[in-house]
Length: 264
Image 1: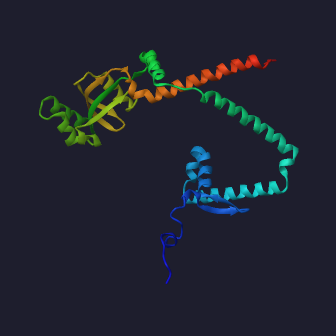
Image 2: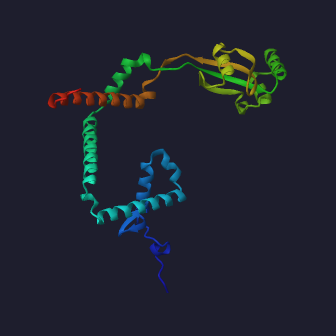
Image 3: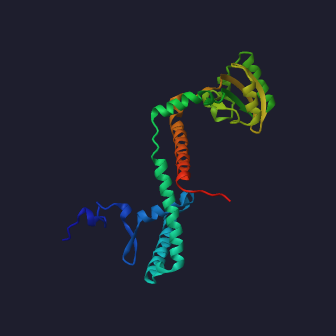
């Protein structure tokens, strides 16, 4: 009787890293899942279209073809050809230059106090835009909107109850509340009305491409400085970029003293 172990029950060693799984072998050298994934990631956003079984199979075929060309080039000693040596020299210089630049900017260190100081120095320019909080009732005719508006103004029904009963917008379940939004986030007619209104005002009907709206302005939030904790990560990235650019330019200035530069 055959002895079934976890390894042969599933046809693979459970301890093996799936990324290292060989998918093919060319000239005795394996091509793995990891190789396919790395190739797709190197394609950037375009690689998303290949991150599926059919796409990965196509990438595998491409890697096999590349490996075949490499083996053939090595067998024919193409690396000894003058044209290849010229290309290699250009690529080597480019890589060396990029490596030197990366070492220059990687030396930059940004501390929390640097980011905090930047925030304090630019606080007046780091403002959150003005926003409003509004509710609405959306119906398909002007007459219906006027009837509902009159009922609200006469105190026959609350705005929230009217929204739940009559509004065709999903926000009806929240009494018509749309939450906070800034300028330009709604259709122009609706946007203009909201930012013209005063807190507590009910206005309508306002016609848009969606129908007729009765609008209630719940609150206006004036532009104000953003809290440090809310934008700390973005500021860290900005301070880092600025310090790296400064380090880069400083190094360039030093190198201009060390090596002659002539412009013609």
